[in-house]
Length: 97
Image 1 (cartoon, rainbow, N blue to C red):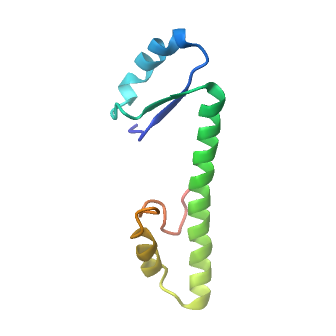
Image 2: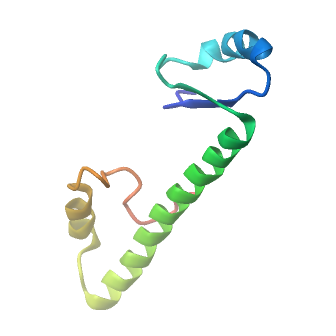
């Protein structure tokens, strides 16, 4: 496992040290450990999953439309990905979940 970030919900500051030690073997990016209250951490996880699903689903729908319109979706993907706010991750149609 090489997570980009580890989001941890902490409800009790007394367990913080133990939690950090537990996750240490997985935390290769030491700035990648994000501590939040429990509800915010949980909500962050749901929001991140939704954002990824939306990105993948949108690209699949654009691919369907591109096929209907005889548009090269690979060229479209490269053009979209060139925008640094979007990037190239998860913008290629296909099975993504």
